[in-house]
Image (tube, rainbow, N blue to C red; front, top):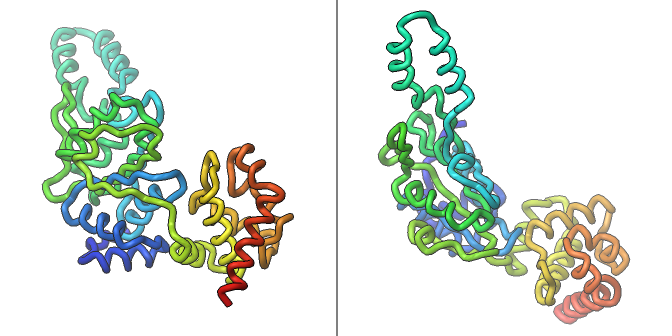
Length: 311
């Protein structure tokens, strides 16, 4: 896959994202453009399902770069995120050296100097992303950083600030000058990420899309959907987000619900269809129970009344 030049302007950034079916708001296109131009990590925070992870995937496809994804989780440490030594292979080498005939001291001395070399180094996502031997700087996605423990963030500071990792037994590995990876961090804000991480990044809050943008997203992501069905889905989901639900549906759920309704050959919404498919849109029984039945009918009647009034 040939590497594509970086966008030349905010408008070019927005156009290239749109060409890959990502519908950006102007502020997001501006932040992405600046992150690429200034070679700074991009920190995206917002509700789940609002397209944060999709930005990294789109940038990789748009710029012709490999995507390296680090999925964060509780207990993630340096060994899981950056590197570790192949201790099993090191032990095997030690035993083979000890079992050799003669020159045992010399063999041990030579082995000691090579135990912490390339052939024993296991590269994880962070180290892969800054590998100077990589033919193309990748897009590094550090996904859902808020799921990792707070101490893990300290491991990231060197990578985010200088695009390098210092390995005590090996030395410092640094991305080639002028060719750092494109780094995208995401957070669902289940906890606050430390200021030291945010200061090294350009920040953008990714919110729920407005009606026009959500409709444009559906038209690109589910191009075969009937126009009236798309309009009613967007209007219904927009109203759902105004309710006091435990987990509001994101754009990912809107897309999935549209695809599900198309599989059922729906042309418009109706209360029964909504009630039977709410599990695609909402993921908690309390939320489903709150919307199912009369509330779903009320929301549908409300949006139909508003559409009729606008004609």
